[in-house]
Amino acid sequence: MTVTNIPSPEDNPFFLIKVRHIFGWYFLLGIGIYFQIAIINHTPGIQFDTEDPLVEAIFGTYLEIFILALVLRQCRLAGIQIKYLVGKVPNHYQWLPVVGLAIASEFFSIGVFRIFYYPLSFIVPSFVEQILTENRDSSILIEASQTFNPGLYYLMFALDSFVIFNLFFNFIFLAIIPHRWAAKWGNIPAIVALCLLWMILGYKNFIAILVYLLIYLILYLKTRSLRVIIVFGVVTSLIFTIWDLSHTIFFNTQTANILDTFRSQIQLGVLFFALSAPWVIGFIYKNWSVLKGPLPYFANASEADKIKADSET
Image 1 (cartoon, one colour):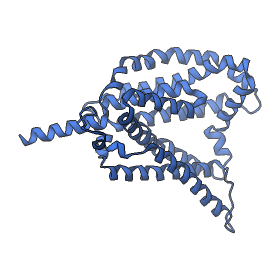
Image 2 (image 1 turned 90 degrees about the vertical axis):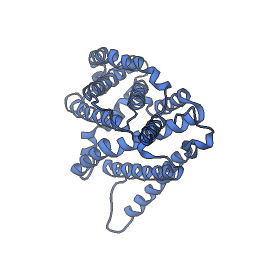
Image 3 (image 1 turned 180 degrees about the vertical axis):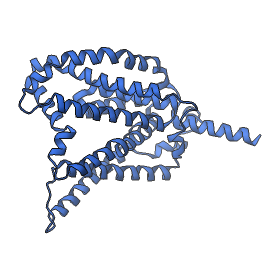
Image 4 (image 1 turned 135 degrees about the horizontal axis):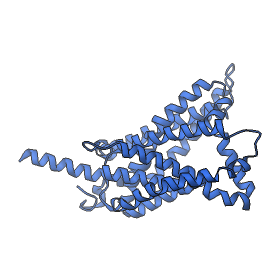
């Protein structure tokens, strides 16, 4: 079964999934959880800062788990078989290139951020300084120092970054939404819409976001396995965490001028970009045709039907 031989839209289970409902749940549940936290905070004997990074981390993880549960329920109601979305890891799959691609992608992100904002730091310094300050303040070490329980914050950060958010992002934004939008508009328009959405959400480093998303999608469509991109996501999260910790320790200081520090790192940005761009852009260019092929759910379902038919003959 492929997306092209489904008799009618009614036979495509992804037509029963509404992306606007997912975003609506996210918004409404976010408000609901916020009010829960506010009520608990006003309970006599229980007082905490709602802007505490640990509270925000718990809030985000709680919300992601709720949305995942709701989307899984909708999939069951729509008759979507999760095993076809998840797929299997290809036999004798080479994991080392995936790790190398994850490292190159992170280097590309670091490099392109510095190259893009370096000239802007002279044209609109206040705007760039605000972005740099927000990035610095969201560093793991700095946020941990601002919470009442740093150890628990590190635990929640690891749980969310390496497990919950990876499952949330890969399942909803790389499996459900592309299949739903492709059912409505076709592969390429769906991918363009998804790229635009994430470039808006990640506007601070939108070029890197676009490249990351294309790599995720290519890996998913090429291997037809959500497990592969989950591993890729875990590796990129680990590399980002290592970079964040090392950058905070060796480069970020509260007393130094943040713009001067950033400008002094332009050589590092150019080096990272030069090392990573051929690998990252080359991977996307060589595998671009994969984005036009059958989506993983239908390819996996078609393969399962073929195996079943062969076993019956």
